Length: 497
Image (cartoon, rainbow, N blue to C red):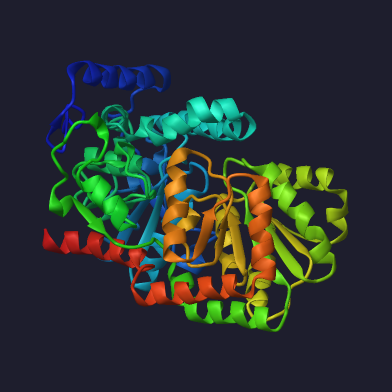
């Protein structure tokens, strides 16, 4: 494997930092084993949950000691001409959602998206390493919502400045060497689009020939660097910050990223959402003009954080829901306990709530009918499967009027948005970008300001319409074409080599 931890885009890493990165890899190898010499057989099958919707095929790894291993070759099941690997991990819902956007765009363009979740191959060192870090991140997210001191002195600094440093990238690159084996029997000529940096780094270490690293956040951080891949960003602000590696080594002026290593694409959004922007925004304005209940969509992320904010919102909206002035979608993802906790805290919720639980066909039917039909009351959604849990929000997004969310990956979606308090300092820049585009609010950093903004949406006739108009204008400007452009870059890189 090519050494990636001693120098990053021509910027040397101190010897002490490099040795620390080596120790990090050795620690994980000792804890979880080193399978860098193992050959895992691969197979491909249609995804049972979003295969029909987005054309997604799952890439599965088998047991290298199984009898089937001898019959599974590197190219079996893959279309090397039209195939595109979507490399991701489950860490919260964001990276899955961005992966679905890439898959959707690829499918609409005639390509075949192959889904590789590096956090799903339980027999590998790769998954063990990712899972251990994911568990820590989820714990930190939950603690940050419960403790102001932890959030102020630990979580915000880590997410805002800690992940920003080149020293962090050096350790990640070493750890990613342990993740490379999952790609061993995937045809190296198939382009890889990674929606988290680890699948990109692992792909580079594994010798995959055409790798695009789709960076999710608007705050430039060295965490997201994968030298050897094409880096894409969703905003011009992020482009400038990454190009000069701004602040990634204190106040030092660093060698910039090469021009051909970084591209602005626009927002990563599903084809189904982009292609229906005009119709969906027109429907929102028509519902408002006809005094239909304003539809709010509350989506709770994979860490299950910020439950108390959602509870406060529901309590405030209940009188309006009963008077049919407001309707509410609540997607708790795959966290059934969050819904149960809401029912315990708000007993009257059960009198107006309809549960759409673990029935994917019924959820799809509801979402389709809501596009043209009337919606009243509260509709709660829970799905045990992770694909359904995440994509449920995407389905409901088209028929909602306002999406209520923290300013993470959903900051970039073409729907009017109300931003609640962030989880991690880096997320604030998503809300800033959305507000500047005129399709989202400022970040509401406490419950009082969140309620104030909800009141404005309900009572102010101009706010929702203005956001809808801006979304339509942004589409015309190509702001939401990022997923298509990422796919184009990946396939062009293959064609050029």
